[in-house]
Image (tube, rainbow, N blue to C red; front, side):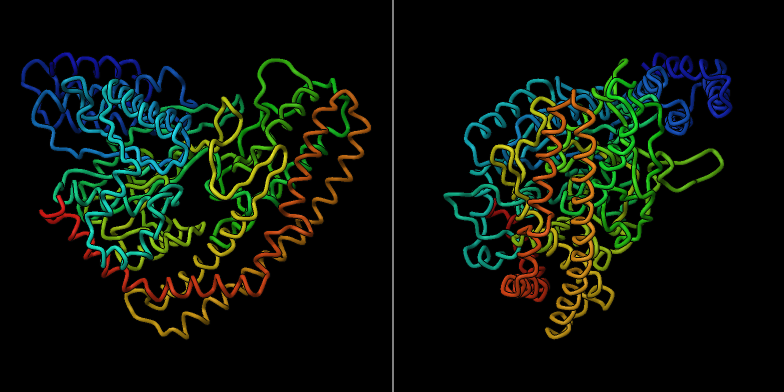
Length: 625
């Protein structure tokens, strides 16, 4: 087996003799596999790893060509064969946890992507018809019985295909809570919530993750060679590549290989990646810049006849500024970048401006599901630390401050750090979680350039399957609930940021200091939201006027203008002068109620940490097994 494996590596490297870095590796291959001595296994392993790294550095320069991407993937598989041929494989095993709620189509795509990742890169190999080192857990928070049955069927389907698939449904979650003594269960209200047992669904992703932590602690607390990989059901194990010739979603990151190598440093307890594709934030904080981009799109077509060839092609994607989709990116330390982003048409073949306009307006309802048609995030291979002159290494880690809750990996020790303030169901829970982790575990919390592909909507239906807090009725969409959770999530995040700078939670702060920080931050955020609101109202009026002008000229695209009218109606409802979301966050009574909730949660956090330690002990005790 080693001869066949190593010969395959030599053949692949030989085809790249004109590439300096790979030519050197081919020369090394010839040296370590010379006929006059037995190949040194450790030298071969090092050669495989350097070959993987060399391909990862080369792929961006060739736009991830199908041929070179396939060669990279084959080198990864040959590396796995080499590992299997020489000794017991003591690398990490993974449980990939996928919380989901009423999303069978999304879940199917996520699991299919995971299975394909296992097939392409073969991490750990197969034994007895199963992939040896990867299992999936479906953590179901669904309400609809039909979707619960679909999720169960997906578990059986992928199990039959060789991917070990565990189903963790409502009954299993309740059984996990029942392991806890009644008094302790009540003491965990700020962590696990107090959902009615007869309606134990749609608890929210943070509460779900904390319940999952209990299950993982009970099952794997003493397993030092297992990692827990959290992914959202609307994500896939691919990256989005953008070029002037169009966008592609490709399997170009060997996630498990890199994560195993990163966690070989046992001081690391948690790693987070990011997402590419659709933004990880709410439409509540993207409305302003999307209106700018929509206006730029309409202005560009204004001077052309409707049968003019589409001009929205052959343009490179904009350089990533970290959070181009966010109206207040500067709050997070990101460069705001260009004022507008040019739409990149997704139609293929010859077509007109009218056809592009029609397609663009069909995408508009998806904005309310969290898509951003003009500010897609692409994978940037250079978004990692340079190691030497040969390029970058995605496995190079850096300190982290935000948990991307749909893309993070922990070892068993990190189960001690639950998702904070979960029952409040605030947005920005990941950044808030991250700020606390910065203080509590410091350098043990890291990030790496291992993003996942985020898809807010399902292609088959052109919309999201389920999103909490979004109300849809015919063409009417209401974001009030999500908007409110976004505002107070921002208040919580930036309050925690200020408090951790003063030593919280390791140091106990006075109630007065916490209350004053909350009030100060709420006032600051209210002013920012008010300023942004005034700008959005002005942009809506301006866009209405432009729409009237264009509508009278492009008379052969009536459906497109109808869709634009509907879009602007929904934008006005949610962000206009009389939007309920803005009224709600300005209401004194509501503000006080939310202030009291946030204050109590912050004050109780230290006590919650102690109760959680007790809960983990109870979950892992023999009596609870």
